[in-house]
Amino acid sequence: MYENTELCAECKGECCKVFPGLCIPTDFGRLANRRGRIKKALQSGRYCLERSAVNRWLMVRPAVIGYERVLIDGKHDGNAECTFLRGTGCELSAGKRPYDCRTLEPVISRRGRKFCKDHGMSQDKQIRRWQPYQQMLREIVAEIEAAPSAN
Ligand code: SF4
Ligand code: SF4
Image (cartoon, rainbow, N blue to C red; front, side, top):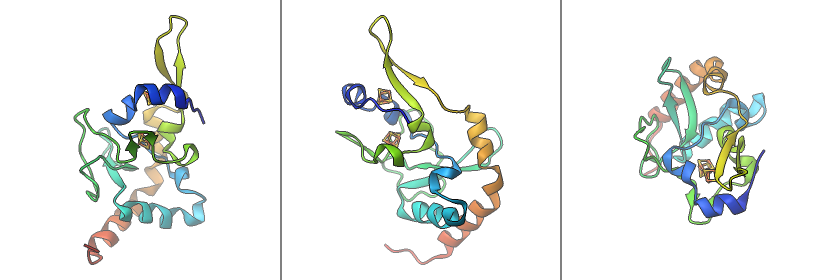
């Protein structure tokens, strides 16, 4: 996990304004509890499902502001601010952030420029992590859609 609160505060969440970071299945705890935690996250409206552009697999990520409670969100226009971004930075504690966010390291180059070094696995590998969960995610979608709305 990488954190540089000073640099992130200065930058005011540049990365979080473009698109929320992707989660991987282990972000939702141990295998035995994972299904329940994913469902709870999706029911909260703060997380949603995203379809991979490559193979249409479903993956979980935080919702985009204004799109909370859209279960399968297709917003991808580069202006998709994460629901967890606050004026003071990310609302989630560092360890609770999505994999994509935890593996980004804000650093200053020798020339004094800020850049963010990605220590995570490739996007492709992150997408593959969701492969065994496709059936489970489809079932969760069906369960949430069938449940009476709380609103
Ligand atoms: S990780 Fe990088 S781009 Fe994102 S808020 Fe921090 S410094 Fe800015
Ligand atoms: S979860 Fe936090 S760190 Fe990740 S994109 Fe959202 S606001 Fe940024």
